[in-house]
Length: 68
Image 1 (cartoon, rainbow, N blue to C red):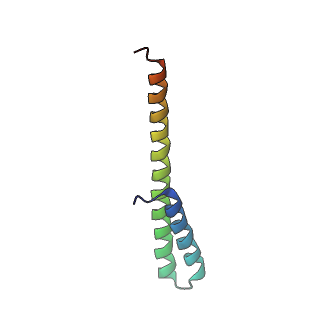
Image 2: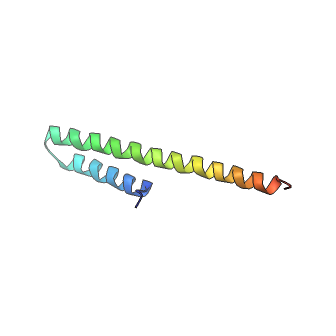
Image 3: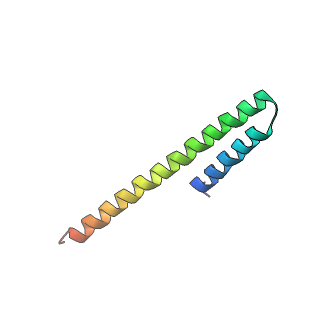
């Protein structure tokens, strides 16, 4: 099963909340680094999906205008 941007965003949110809840500085930093990593994964997934949608739309458009 492929992970989705929703999963990544949820993990980033959980890490952010955990960072706010902890009183230990080193643990807070760990959660904040994790939050950043999950956010990067989500952003990458969103960008990949958007690029794929554009390519598919271009292919569909080309197929409609191709007289063969």
